[in-house]
Image (cartoon, rainbow, N blue to C red; front, top):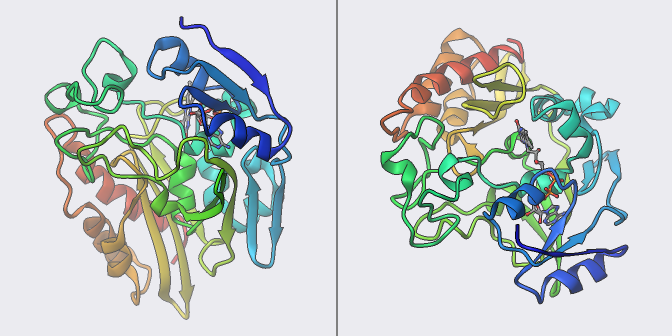
Length: 323
Ligand SMILES: Cc1cc2nc3c(=O)[nH]c(=O)nc-3n(C[C@H](O)[C@H](O)[C@H](O)COP(=O)(O)OP(=O)(O)OC[C@H]3O[C@@H](n4cnc5c(N)ncnc54)[C@H](O)[C@@H]3O)c2cc1C
């Protein structure tokens, strides 16, 4: 294992000043992911800057919406989150294991790396880990890989359950970099791989996530997260769906449908939202939304099953939010 130095910081400013100018420095928050990646060689870091002492732990619900600090713990247990943002609580509970959930942080969860085995195993070619080396997944075992948004250079999927739920809630990520603060809609946080899969997000090196804002909406309270995976627990999504609907007088006025496990970033299913809006929420509209969600998929040899899985999962998730 490559040696690295370890420092702690107590202010956002000092954190940014330490990491931004040093391309080999990285933040460490819950440490459930970054230490493994440094140890196994997927990430080359000489310096880890521990941000756990930063004052970014609050969970603040209010009339404008919900603020979640980048280091907040157990967001899923907050009574207002459970009541008013069920999709968030369900997505967090569906992730990892109780032991990992005791450690991990929302900021670290959003920036976790792909679980594609060709990225994780340094013996394989991976353009995301080593630009220009190739993509083993294209012709290899691509059962877990993308059916939307991939490129000839990378078909890895983003692993975060939280990011999918936040996409269905129009969340905004707050950051602090050397040039100041930014607010980034979560849909714009992640890049599609294109020809540069190693550039995963729009964040600059050293730009710190300070928190996440979920705006108040009419659909957040009527929301649901469905995760389909190989094991009932402790497994990443084959397909996941976050749905949130605003139904008035029996008709869907507005909705959000986001998919996980199918694309290099949380995948907003806009065609499904369009298919559902203005319709009563019933079996027919749920099925139509499912079919629309799966339209345009480009599956690979081993993941054709994900197309039908998306269709059914969307319909089933919508059945959980009532008629
Ligand atoms: C066995 C296992 C199973 C898992 N299953 C799931 C699952 O089913 N679903 C799921 O969603 N996740 C799952 N995870 C992922 C787990 O949730 C992540 O390990 C975790 O979210 C990373 O959070 P962390 O705080 O430990 O981040 P760290 O490991 O500390 O950091 C991860 C990355 O984020 C960066 N970072 C951290 N905080 C910030 C910040 N505030 N600003 C900028 N950069 C930052 C770090 O530099 C690093 O690159 C699993 C993990 C394990 C080990």
